[in-house]
Structure formats: structure tokens, C-alpha cells
Length: 165
Image (cartoon, rainbow, N blue to C red; front, side, top):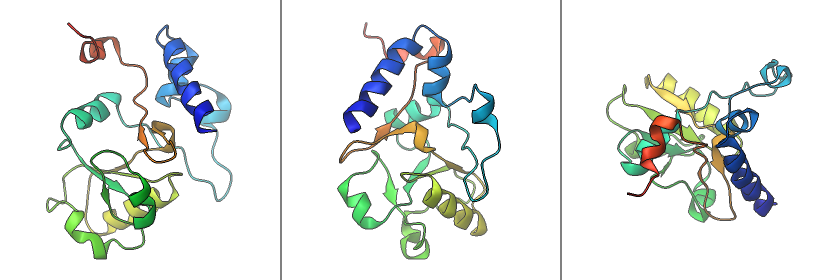
């Protein structure tokens, strides 16, 4: 299953470089009426994607924002995104030392499906944090042990970040 997902991302990136619907699928932009429809009762609303340039900036300098993993310590121990701190959605107070002192500092939260990330975001907002965003599951590629950002296809302005001179 993981191999097919990685293959899909690789093929999608290659096709997306030429533009079109494949790029929209990789970057998380909704292009169909079904994708834009309201979720059924009990389902999560679609999570707006975090800008690709912000994710790339974090990879270059992980001080761009605070990245919090809302999963359990056991799941975090198996693998987590580079630079993430573990703050389980149901134990925020016990992990307060991982939170930024500045309540206006940017925070990005994630989990595997988005549900625990949404719960963590809600709790952080209750605690007074004003700039909390969710890294949606469509922006993470999961392998058996090491999740990684799915940054999508670079904008033409950002291709210089990937070129070798």
C-alpha cells in the first residue's frame, strides 16, 4: 500500500510538472464539485493546504513555525515529521514546555487523519494561541516509519530551490 502511495505521488509529481489537474491533486486544491461539497455529518471539513513555500522554508530552517504532532507518544516514537514536537491532543498541559511562549507565534499541527490535529488546534486556540493551522493529511506522505511533507510541484518561482548549479 505504501509503495503505491509513493508511486502515486511520484507519478503525480511528474505529470503535475506539465500542469493541469494532476498538479491541483498534488497540491491539495479542490477542482471538482464533489471535492468542494460540504462533508457529511460527522466528517471533517476539508483542511486548506499550507503553502508549499512555507513547508520548504521549514525544511530549510525549522524555526519558520512550531510543528506539533498531535498523535500519541508511542506513534511519535515510531516516526514523525522532521522537526516536530510531540504534543498529544489529549495531554496538552503535560507537554506545555513544547509550546512557544509567544501566543502569536505560528504553529502547525498534524496527525495521520486530521482529527487529532483539529482537536489539538481547538485546545491551543482555547489557551490563547492565535496562529494555529492544520497540516492536512493530503500534505503528508506516510511510510512505515517516517512521514514526510508532500510539498507538491514547485511554482515556477520556486524551481530555483531545487535546481543545482
